[in-house]
Image (tube, rainbow, N blue to C red; front, side, top):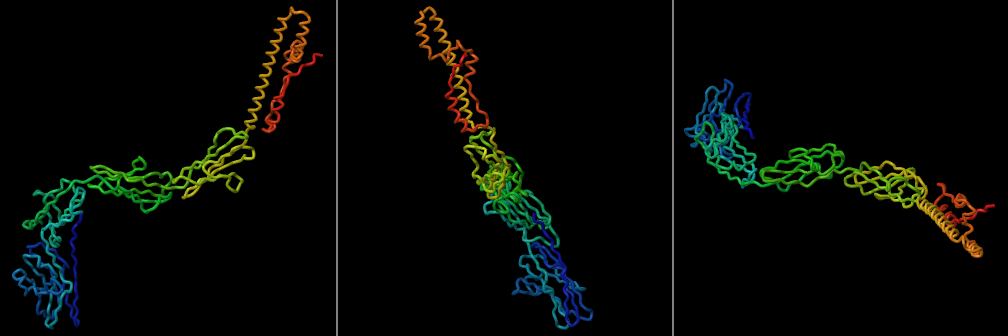
Length: 491
């Protein structure tokens, strides 16, 4: 609301001439009066007793080029009265009209023939009850603002009450305030308005008709950042939500899907990475809603860590991959790999692979992630060989399995031979000798002269211990493949 201010000032003017002082006092410097009313323009003066005042007069100045004596101007005839007794120089003006507006200045003449006046004078303004309308646009839409102004000024001597009516009914009364302010017009505000001034009810203003069109849902919703530019960790910023909506939209702020607060602005001070994410505003009125695009908080990498794939025990000859992960916005694109106690990087990229791991690679490794706002290194991870080469172990297992199969075949052959001897007990000696001769090739496997323990004791091999390297195991594999069963001499 605009409040009326009653301006009253006291002006004391000293007029000096050859040691003689004259004081002319205009109690106020400006006045506002209502048309057709009566106004007293206050004034007083003093002068030395030995000086004679020969004449007093009021001048009226509508413009610097147009100055008239009030007592001689036909426009003031019958409407003015000068109070010129005992130092009183006030002027009474009746039935004020618009042409009376201007500057009134009192003039004092002395016996010496000199004239004295107050150069500033008193400015008189004349008002009526006419209504002036100011709107946001020529076509009033729901949600716009309207100002109704009753008259051009507020009477300064007797402050009146302004009465506003809508469609013939009392709308509001405002003492000393000639403005009716509708900040957000609704459809119910359309109609005819006029005003009157208390004490001057006969001066009703003409009515003004207000038509209000329906509003619309929010559009062109956007977020502006102050100060402008990217938001970096540690900044303090203000986010402003802008929208075009009638009636004006109610604004709500969100981070992702979490509600933060209501209002046109949202302040973030000393931003931390925890505050990162997408911020946006939602504008809503009774016709609908719209959401702005999101704004991001940027920050350098944090929580950088290394993972090993595959996880678990590392055996010589394995393939190992180290992966570097980080939390940053924008995402880190530069990754470097380092081995402790070495000055230069050993690799780059988010992943670092070793195709055939050996004891020479053992050590502690870490990665460093970097984006345009900074970098951070991870904690170190240890890579150490914990066993022999897996390929060599597979070879040994195959040899053991092969020896077991050979023993099984020998047992089958012995079993078949015994069975044939029992079936051939009735044959003659020559046949037996022939059979014996044909069996010479099996002598080494004959169980008649050996115990089963002897058989198994001759089938021996040495399992490799963990100290053999992969090359040593491969060179010994031919020994295991050429294992043969030897007969034991019974003597």
